[in-house]
Length: 309
Ligand SMILES: Nc1nc(=O)c2c([nH]1)NC[C@@H]1CN(c3ccc(C(=O)N[C@@H](CCC(=O)O)C(=O)O)cc3)C=[N+]21
Image 1 (spheres, rainbow, N blue to C red):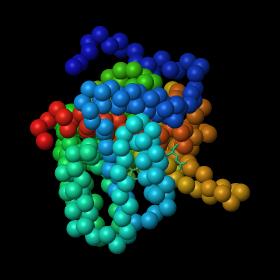
Image 2 (cartoon, protein in one colour; image 1 turned 180 degrees about the vertical axis):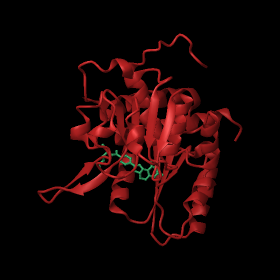
Image 3 (cartoon, protein in one colour; image 1 turned 120 degrees about the vertical axis):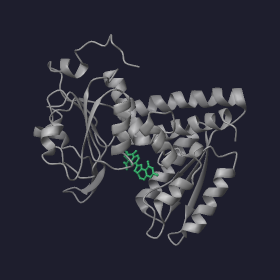
């Protein structure tokens, strides 16, 4: 798939002109992506008579998770899909959760299953994730889909990295040959992000907790994706001038006036003037994550028809 016609000059090289710190509007991108998904859902229903359905399972009563899961249900309805919510008590056993997943796996009206993480202590998240039918694993976190991604095979891709990739491709076009640095090596974001970028032809480094002199690496990045949960970790002198910066981190912090606000892993105000383009928090990667969940649900509905059940 190598494209020998790609010029040696990459977009990030030429971004050394006057333009700096252009905000990447993930919220607006997510709105247009959802519009496209809604149109695709109509066409899918017209062709096959099937309405894609998403089951979301939440165990326990973390208030932030409850709001987040309700938003998912609302957005699922907005694009014309069906939503099935399962709010289970904190005391739910692993066996009961596995039984529920077995039922959802067998239900032909459900094409996507998402179990909100983290799960309460005593429930093995890996076991739960792997119990989801790989064709319905819209989070892409099970071993089958993770393995497919690592082999460069088609499969369901974790929503947050997929959303980041869409933003990068819409900003930069072809990513081949660019230096990408991913900060954070989680199974949820960092690792799948690095693999996606590798599959797109980037030269990829992963900075993690044991990395010696992380700043020396981040300063080489044309593309810098940060997913650590450490708010304000990335300072101005960690970033190459003109780089495209994607901030996945989202932390709620108190403000002086006694309220709270959301901040990212990137010190936005000081990095924005250095970066070529940068995602804000909120309004950057977060809205893309939910839109990609809907995209994956449509993909899963297509898979349910194209493969023997
Ligand atoms: N199985 C699983 N899959 C997930 O994808 C998953 C999960 N568990 N557990 C929790 C995290 C968190 N997460 C977010 C998605 C969107 C926003 C989002 O839309 N944020 C808005 C702000 C929302 C607000 O104002 O509170 C924004 O950044 O603009 C945030 C957080 C997905 N997660």
